[in-house]
Length: 193
Image (cartoon, rainbow, N blue to C red; front, side, top):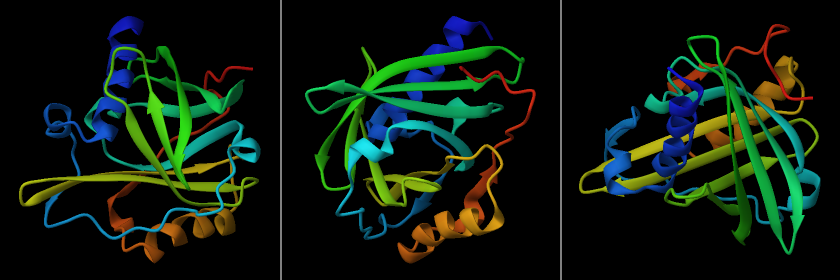
């Protein structure tokens, strides 16, 4: 897969998160029933959330298939907007990235936008800003719901206690931990400096 097509795939990931009907059917975590009643981090503050986050676990998503070394860097753009710079290594070993922006639309919820793609809601269930962030999205279509989840950490190699704290936010919101898969993070990853 070329760098350009991988970037398109990452941008389409944003569409998947958004709940758009066409993109949603391409996700992998689909179940009968409704989305859980979640609680976002009510006192969320975007300023201490800035910086680098490493993806430690995620629900399978077709457009992230085979990707590892996934991380995101959030930077202040001013006027309440944050630059979102996502990077990953593809299953072919290529580095890929995409840049967008986000802003808080309600407590604990950010609207993430990548040019030309459907905006996505990013629900921060919990974060301590220094160790972990538990991020979720779910939407319903008919009798089914599609859900996406990511456990992010500040450290490339976090402790078991940090992973447990991040996972607790999903448990507290009735989100299935069995659907998580570990994302490889290693010394050979092509991170931005």
